[in-house]
Amino acid sequence: MVRDENYQALKDEFSSTFIRDLIPGILHNFANPLNSIMGRSKLLQRRFEEITAKIIQTHPEAADEAREDFQRVKTEITAINNESEIFFDLFRSLSGKFYMLDSKGESRINLSQLLTNEMRFFFFYLDFKHELKKTMKLNYDAPSFKGNIAELSLAFWKLIRFAVSRSLASILKEFYIETTHDSKYVSVLIRDSGAVLPAADIENLLKQLRTNQGEKPVSVIDPGILPSLLIVNKYQAKINILSEENYSTISLKFPYQSVKVSPE
Image (cartoon, rainbow, N blue to C red; front, side, top):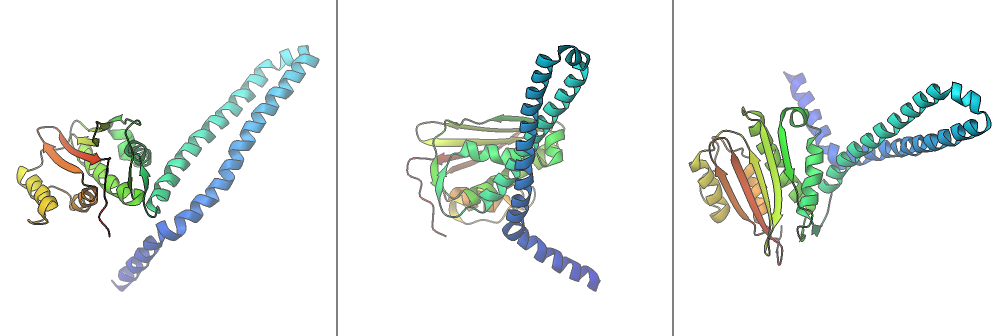
């Protein structure tokens, strides 16, 4: 229908402006009232404690009669403070993701910190939050290296989403991510409990990464995996995919001594 085509055209145009134009304004408009709520709730807690202490000192009998009321109000104020802290953490996770996507040029990147931000963002996916057994072992002492955080953020989003989708479709529903390092490499393991990936598809994908030859795997491996690994490949990383019964693992080893990113 013509109406459907017009709607889709406008929807696509709206979507194309969302990250670049709308998100910064949305985050800014959320930040101001959120900071005010957090500041005022902490001020309210401090003033309440000061007032109750004064009443207890000057009117001990009245304070004793109102003790339960004081405690109820204190509990509610504490709950407001706790919930505002949770809201702030959620806001920080969301804003951190979009700020990374807007990052220009190169900077020092700690992969464990980048992946921490990615995993915080993934808790906005309700199926990830509620339906998976998640194991995350991120070593923050891992050395950093220079790179573009926007492209690595997108690459890891896709790799993680691929593993999460496979885990959700499995019986075990397990997801695992880990970072380690040695004297040469910072390593990332992303493991899912999905079905076995065909060896031919894995070999075809790795061959294309090595030589830019071979057919694009289409049967099981998500087509979005190839551009993600091509980004990783720019960092001279060692890439391997191992798939066995119950578990598949994407292994990435980034050299951190002298990484040279290919020019765009």
